Length: 277
Image (cartoon, rainbow, N blue to C red):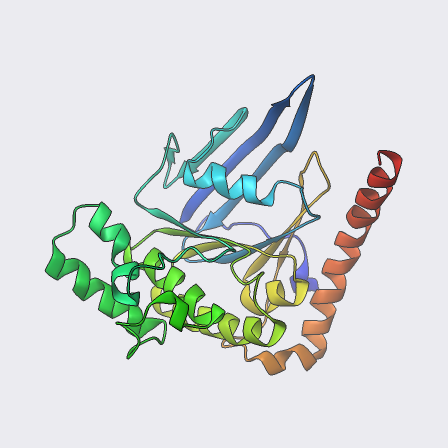
């Protein structure tokens, strides 16, 4: 494995947007306690794109919930810009896997929805919505409704709605999981272009190792449950990264290294399922 793909660390010069300090999360399930995340410590530097991979059910989505304030950790702390996260915040936004567009609203009104809820005056919110619609490549579709759009276009609407809130942190929970592989690559390239314009800090959950390497500055590998942060792999590939980069030898080296880290966790998951049918 290349020397630049070792476990990554934040340098003192980096401005940190998210800090996780020994974060654990457990749930009561009848007679048992289920520990989803155990003592996860890590940081997301300002403007960095980080992907999270790991076995199904290992707590990746829970990690996003803790950062955006939808849940409070059982122990440990989550801080954004040095402030403890105690609930939902205006400086974080989430994009989900499923279609979250409001089918009775136009593209313009979908993108402006969060601003409307926040009480932003109509002229300002419509101007901001138009700016984000152009950014995600949907100019000309402002008056369309979700049923008239493809799945990939609806996800662009969801991204535009999140970005309209000017979030410091953009959290993405397998946002392309329901799309076909070809569309995923196209939207992935678009997401990179958008991120390079906005430079939000991004935490992106995916099951696709190739997608993680294509998009990210760093990839976090989560272990099986109770999940820990097994490794942080810095991706030192030049940007922009067209989809053709998947043929590059260094790209293959990164994906191979990530699979080597992930495979034992998937095997352990399968063994556990067989032992408890």
